[in-house]
Length: 276
Image 1: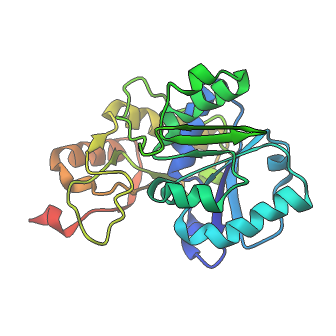
Image 2 (image 1 turned 30 degrees about the vertical axis):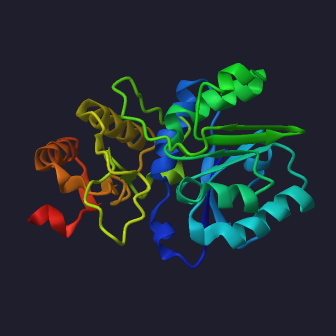
């Protein structure tokens, strides 16, 4: 289960039903024959969806402001409802503060730094097979369970290039997650060095191949048709790249594909430096 903890006071989540991390990580897990469920987990609260309780692993995407309410939530699922599956965590908090995350989150079995879609499925495969040699082929993670602890290059952040062979698989998506459109990044990284930016995705610019974006939009459209979804926001897209306008030619191609596939652009993230 891929779980997105969200603060109930953060109104942004009212219009985000399918996160970028779920989109990429869910697809990667499906490509590697894992069953996937996704959803938001409001915090602070002492409730959790029953379908998550049946999952053999819960993976959380964590931001720094979630630490205290997430600790309370962990205590709830571990001590009050006795969830006994594995718990994994990643996201900006783990990426930027790995040692602090390991210290404050002892109940989390697996911490993964960086962008996990190219590593997480294989870590789970190795854990399921109890294959330490396979596990140690990867880096940027900490794993512990029942007297075993493995730390593999925890100073490394996983920042893979977008792969031409990466395929989106939307079979795990629920109908209600489609109604607000797509939240996605088509490029990662930024070389601007703005002082207010946490630079989670690093300075190296990496771009999703255009054919992969078109494939995603066509798959999403097919889902909308299958479920006869007519929400005015369903065919909108928000690009939350670090700076989509770093390479204007690529941005133009992306905008053209979005228009060609019948989507409206809801928003982009960029820097004022891209205009000079």
